[in-house]
Length: 114
Image 1 (cartoon, one colour):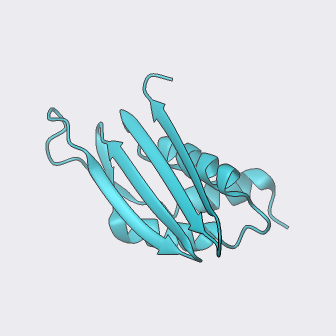
Image 2 (cartoon, helix red, strand yellow):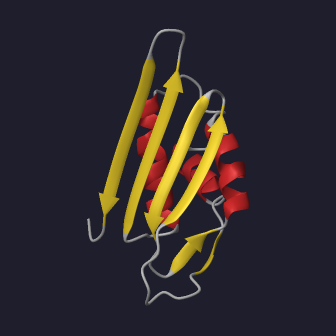
Image 3 (cartoon, helix red, strand yellow):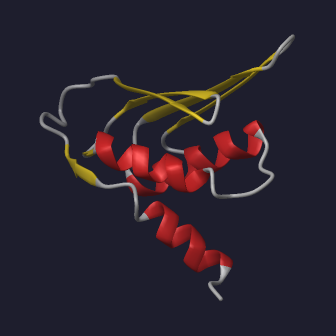
């Protein structure tokens, strides 16, 4: 049986990175995904590395194997995992889910050096 730390490392290892093409120039990188009726918006300013888009889809698919996780906890987990792998200067995660009569949004942000 895998330990919680092993599970976290395996999940984070799904996020592949590559060197930023021009690390001396700030750029805002945007990713969008829709998974399991949840709209995911990821915006970040890379430092040295950028996130490989294909690996984000694999990572997000693995995230939904975690049972009974709230949007708030999901946003926090994604933020922590991306901060661990990419180490962006600024990162914003937004998750939205619409139900029949309600909409639930969670937005979380982090800036370095925190």
